[in-house]
Amino acid sequence: MNGMLEGLSMYAQMMEAAGTDATFVRKWIADTKHMLDNYRNPTTMSEKYKMLEEFSDAFSIKNKPGVEHFDPSIPDETTKRALRYYLMKEEVDEYLYATDIVDIADALADQMYILIGTIMAHGLQDVFEDIFKEVHRSNMSKLGEDNRPIYREDGKVMKGPNYSRPDIKSIIEKHLNNERQSIMHG
Image (cartoon, rainbow, N blue to C red; front, side, top):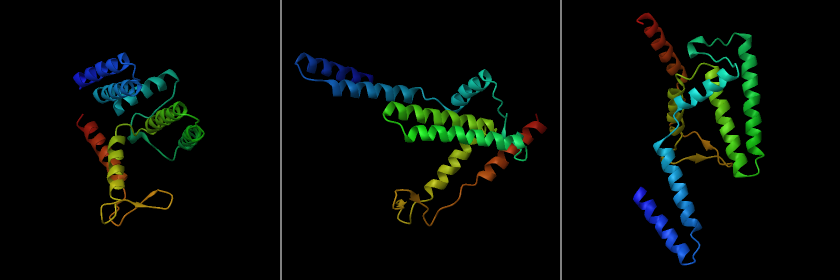
């Protein structure tokens, strides 16, 4: 791929030497390099969790070490959920009222930042990738009998006849059982 990009760069130079605008070629080269860099060096979820841990430590935000510590009966949980809700709502509103692609990118990054922080606040960081995969499996089961999506009038994807709900409870229970096993044999 680098050879191709070098060739395109030389082509752009030749275009410019001939007095032809090569902006589109240079933009394509830059976009391709950016895409390749992201492909070669992806930021994994665990790296994102580490970034949020750094933020949480710097700002004295207490996160749960794991889902096994979640107790919805604790009043603090309701307060935490309300705060997280309003933080997310603020960023969704920022996205809605964005006036350009920079504002949109900022709002989306902030949404992801808050979402990952919320995952960690509830101690779900060790199990969330499995939960996400299960939700994806469930979403893919929404296809119609003809393996095509069924859309509502406004574009929302509807549930097809083979839809099956995500089984998140089993994933969390499996995680909790694995945690108990590792503590007992640990």
